Each structure stands twice: as C-alpha cells, then as structure tokens.
Length: 600
Image (cartoon, rainbow, N blue to C red; front, side, top):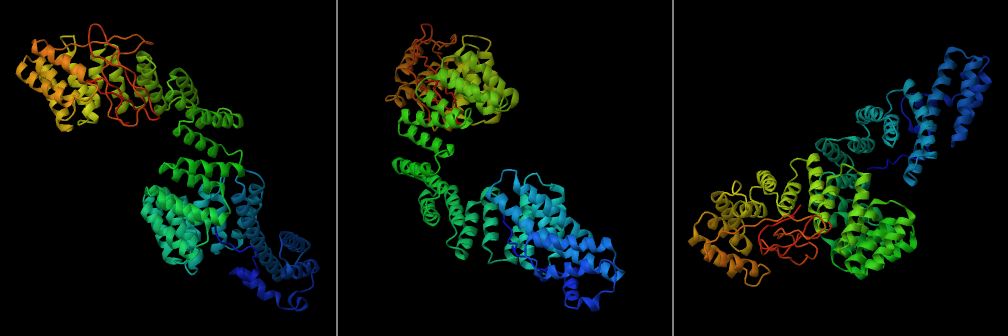
C-alpha cells in the first residue's frame, strides 16, 4: 500500500542514541583518544574511513577494520568505541541495503536479487537492535522488509508496533509506520483507525492520502471516500499518474465512466501512453458502448505490450460485443498460444461458443475449467445451464446436484434443478427443490409461480394441492402487480384444480387479455378452452437427453441468450424448450408457465 520515503544516503548524524556518541568521539584526535594497544592502528583506519564512507563497499570495509581491531585487542574504552562504531555502521549499511531491496522489489516482484539484498539488510539491522533497541527507524525498516513476500509476518508485526511506539516525537515516521501497520492489519476498523491517525499526523503527505484512499476503495467499499482522498493527494501532486489512475478506478466504482475517462486521459498524457491506463480507459469506454474507441485504445496498448493477454482478451470481449466473432476467436487463439490453458481465455471461448449455439463446445471448455477448480460451484452451475440449453436435462441435474453438495442452500442451484426435474417429469423432486428455494426467497415470483403450477397441473394425484396452488399463485400475482399473463394463468390453473370454474375462467380471461401481444397467447387460449369445458389442465414432461425438453419456461432475465423455438408435446400442448445460457447462468424461454433460470 505504501512506499516508505527512506533517504538513500544515510549518514551517521541521522541516527540517534549511540550513533551520536560515535560522532562526538570522532572529533577528538586519535592520539588523545586511544591508549596504545594492539588493535589501535586498525581502529584508527576504521575511524578515518567511516568519516568519508558513502557506499556499501566503504561501509563493509569499516566493519571489517573495526572487527579486526577488536580481535587484535583493545582496552575497555576503545573496545566500547569500536562496538559503537560497528553498530552505527551496521545501521547505515543495513538501511542502504534495505532501500535497495524495496526499490528492486517494486521494479520486479519476482524472487531474485531483491530477496538476497533483503536478507543482507535484515542481518545488519537485527545486529543493530542487539546493541541499540530504541531506534524507531530500524524497527520500521525491519517491519517493512518482513512485510514483503516470503518475509516473517510475525516479526513484521512485532517490529511495526515497536516502530509506532518509539516514533512519538517524529510525526512523519510515525505516520509511515501507521500506514504500514494498517497494511498488515485484517480488521477493517483497526486499519481505518491507523490510517486516520496517519493522515492527521501528515496531512500534506500525498502517499498517506493515497494509502487511505486505496483502503476505502479496495477494502472498505466506499469509493466516494476513496475519491476524496485521491483528490486531496492530487492537490499535493497533481502530475502524479498513479493518483490519476486511482481516481479513474474510484470513478468507475461510482459508475461514472465519463469522469473516469477524463482521469485516464490525464494518466495517458502524464505517462506517455501507459498501456495499463489505455486498458482501463478502454474498459470505461466499453461501459459507454463506445466500442470502436475502446478498440483503438486496446490496439495502441498492444503495440506497446504485444504479449499482454489481459489486453488481448479484453479486445476479444469487445469484438464479441460487436458480433465480430472471428476477430474475437483470433485474439483468444493468440492468447492461448502465448499461455496454453489460460482460464480466462478458455472461459471466453466457451461463452462465445454458447452464444453461437455450439453448446457441446461450450460444455467442453467449461468442463476443462472445472478440472482446474473441481469445487467451483459457479462453474458447475454454468455447465448445468449449458446442458439444459444443449437438451441434456438429466446431465444438467447431475451438475446442479454437485453444486448443491458444495452449497446446500444455493438458491440458483435449487431453482434450476427444480426446473430441470420438471422437464424430465420428476415432479416430487421438483416440488421439494421449489419448497426449499422458497424458504430462501419467499417472494421470488418465479418459484412461487412454478410451484403453484406443478401443484395445480401434475398428473400425479398425490402431488396436486389446489388450495396451496391458489395461495402461491396469488402471492406470485401480488409480487408482479397482476400484470404477467403466464402467472395469471397459473392462478387460473389452481382454481381449476379446486373445481372453482368461475374463478378459473375469471383469471384465465385476464391472462388472455394481458398476454394478447405476447408469445404466451396461443398457450393461454388453449387453457381457456379447457376450463370452459370444466377440464383441469394436466402437464407432464419426460424428455430424454439430446432432445428438446418440454418444460414450460420463462425467465425474468433481460441478459439471456436467444431462446429456442417451442416444440409441442402430443400429450401436453404448449410446452416450450428451456433457455440458452448467457455469461451468467441465466436464461429466457417463450413458454407461458414455468419460469426458470432466475437472476443469480
């Protein structure tokens, strides 16, 4: 979250405590300071080199000479002086190495040189603490180094608490320490408390405002507060591209793509066409359906980073939105050449296959993804919907069942399995799933309607319940303001099952009127004719896999794929095919009765 502002050229005079004692001692003549002893010459040479040392190599030579002096022999006073010299030199070298490690990590986060440098820095800094345990800067940097990947987390937490405690008289350092501690924290309230205090201590620090803004954006889910911090930070450093990028992210989270584009424009300007900024600006343009402009940004980004699969796959998605399937597939193929088995590419390829009606290919891709993540419920549900769309209801049931083994209270899995059970004539199983789904969402119009329908129309005498069907059908009508033709006709079916032909005709007439201009009209008219003859409606599907299931399905989703045409069942007229999937497992079908594939 935060990059510490540690000066690269650490000098002895910057270190408190024992280090200042060493500086005071250095101003005296070595002939006055030291008694004659064996290590005197080495100590004198170390002292002289320390005064001019400004590199790791110079400091290493000082350490070598001071250690040699102690080994050769010094009196008590000179021994103490040599140890103080060693401590200050270890501190100076450790801090220089620490900053080098942090800088290299920020440039290249792969384990390598930076990790080796970190190890050397930590050795030096931990040695300092053995002699001087009151220096906040040392604790801070040990915490910083251990907070990086593969560091010692517990040691980081111990030392950052100490850094906060010892930096009471250094507002800038304490603010940095609080930000670092917040980054290690898992409790949001504790994180915010540290960040709020850091801002109070250093109100003009761009980095600290940015840190709190990122917390609000990424962990606190308050993009409006994040934007306020980013704006404040931008007042301090208006030409910082990272801040403008953060502002763009906040605007996107606030669903303000036009403002986000303005922020990304500034990033592109400040960074001379940064590919990541172009990628984010393209995403904002897609939100506004400015597809050609988005493609232009993505093309420019790919010119700078030809191997960037994130950019390539976003372009493929945009091509798909433009119905340029061949171009989308070409980008996906290119991405998979660069990285075989890339899940995002396989997923998009599967979605395009589903969109084009090639369900077998789509299923193949999603099954491949499921092998990589065998317990992924979302993938199981997607495959289930694809199998329904591919006319394989029994195999779909297997996937929904697998999903429910992982998440027994998954509403969508219960709802879609119930619909699939209806399509193969398993009404008892469908009723059980609808009943459980209804406990999770008591006012879901689709479940209310479907359960009411099967309770009114099932050929199995033991399953029908006219009274309960009327209750559920009435609730479904209330939820939909008595405006949905197929739900009104479900209520009519409940009254027909109860031999209340007056109300059956009343509600089926209202259904005919409401559905006059819909795909449900023909089906509802047939039901009306049946009720006029005082015949209750009966419906049973028992479709084999690889044939069009006959469930009477209608979805509430507007984002679904194009539905299949209905096929009539000779025994039960008016049954329609289930839905094709969209990216999310949602579907839409023309049948008038059973609503399937609700919003996830």
